[in-house]
Length: 87
Image 1 (tube, rainbow, N blue to C red):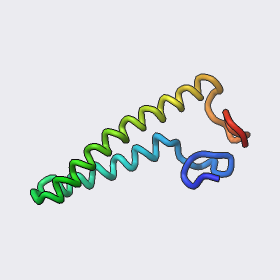
Image 2 (tube, helix red, strand yellow):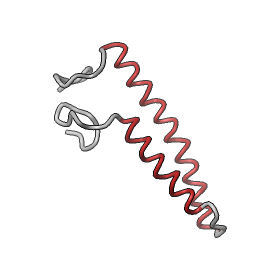
Image 3 (cartoon, rainbow, N blue to C red):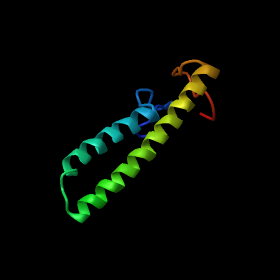
């Protein structure tokens, strides 16, 4: 069972790239709140967030590629079962 992602038991779930994009937007918003803070701790957190944003962008690209691969091979997902793997 999944909590957030589309699955047989959660057909109204989100695609992985959608979830990651929401998280990326949240982190970007947070960055705008601390970007003017010159304390070393704030700078450190901002640098970490920037690194995380880069990783999230890479992960979003990979997730989009997987979705494209599945759509191309098996068509748009339907609720009758998984396109690959076991039920």
